[in-house]
Amino acid sequence: MRVSFTKMHGLGNDFVVVPASGMAPPPAGTIRALADRKTGIGFDQLLWLEKPRIPGAAVYYRIFNTDGSEAEQCGNGARCIARLVGGDSSGALVLQHRGGSSRARLEHSGLVSVEVAVPEFAPGRVPFLAAAEADSYKVKAGRRNVELRVVSLGNPHAVIRVEDVDAAPVATLGPALEGHERFPNRANIGFMQVLDPEHIRLRVFERGVGETRACGTGACAAAVVGQRAGWLAPRVHVSLPGGELLVRWDGPGTPVWLTGEAVTVFEGTVDI
Image (cartoon, rainbow, N blue to C red; front, side, top):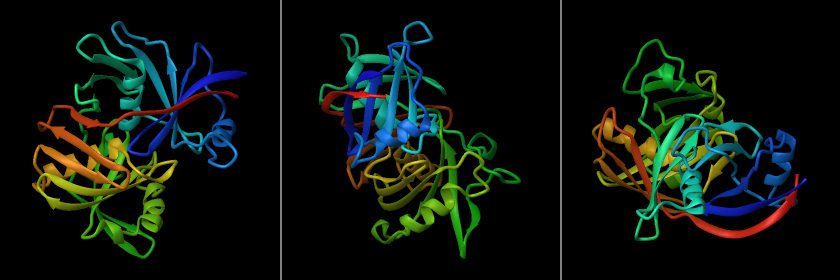
């Protein structure tokens, strides 16, 4: 079946967005083939748009990684969907997803802001296997003993503070922790360098994808664990390999807001 799609990206974290029109999403093998950057379209995630299931929402979206697995949330993807769908006269709209619904806003600056989630730090909510909740946890990965902090932003994250993000062992420690037995649903692994209370550098090994140029929920995870640890301010600029994001968190019980670019690259059709 031939379907239309839009190729988009947020800081180089790229997506194929498909308005499903009642179609079921393709099987994992088809998603893997489409994601191949040499023989397919190439993307970090497939965003599958369906009719909203609650009043007032603009769309219901599903997220599929390059390995065909389904993710719960995607901050950069949500911003791209908001850009594609468009808001009301004020630029505001509501997006529905597996975890519930999120507000989004098209800013006058041309950037897009999205309400990601209320952070959950309890291990069972991430999920992460631990005897009790703590500020940080020690995890053995191969021969390494790693100190990390965990949080759910609708999807599971671990954040490791490093002295130099360029020298961080993302390619080896990332996959070792992504599928670690203490993360029953696997996890996104962030490596964070704190430059000052309002600025961090970050690299993220994404679950089911590998290292990407940017990860929106990963930026939120790093900012909130850093704020909770006393390292960071409520507004944090996050420098990723693909560019800059702004994260705002007003504290426990409130949602995290993520602001950044959302760019349309091209439109096309493909057989699935």
